[in-house]
Image (cartoon, rainbow, N blue to C red; front, side):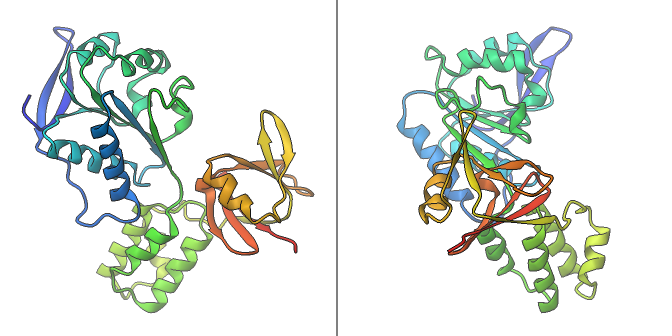
Length: 317
């Protein structure tokens, strides 16, 4: 096969799958922010060092960065003469797995995974991904909502070794991006305020607001938001919760001492969920994941949960 990006095609007349060269590589931004380039290189290095196939799952809202990471990772593979098979908006059947098994070493880039593979096919993908008889494959799976990923694949590193769940735009990425452009000072302050208060804020949001501002610097911040398609940037309800952090484990709530400085570093860095019980409030509680946390200081952990509530956990000393 020629080294290129191929689109997967299905011939309805002949009931057969085929490949069509689409482009030499994926277009990516001239500058990549945050951990994205490091992660792409890390994933490729792992694949290059192993003899078996490797899977990478990327989940998160549209515009969060998962497609950019998938594209950059695919371009790494192309640099090393490995073709990329892009699978999106195509009819999928069991025959597809047989077709893919016959392909030489390549990247199988499955964008919007759940739209193309129903739960039945996702289950069948289990044995396909672990098939040691076929040529090595690098699987890249993207999905907006990780709940649409079969439980047989989610949390199964034997099938998909890596999983990056993109949440709200990270603060270091926000600041790094803003340093690259000349904003009207008052506009930049309002942009930072909006970022701080908004429960959902993606790279797409930041790029759109910045592009509009640079074209029309005389336009005030409110008008910019009013005419852009960024209505999700709303101020959430703020809930102050004092030292009532519980860990949810195997259905049993276990008290976690939030006064312990190791809670945020230890528990969250291990990727475990923490349960916030909101005493004296009509909301029973929320799961908090590492991706929800936006700021940790000596006496407060701030996070967004449920895309609606901003929760501030105060340490009582």
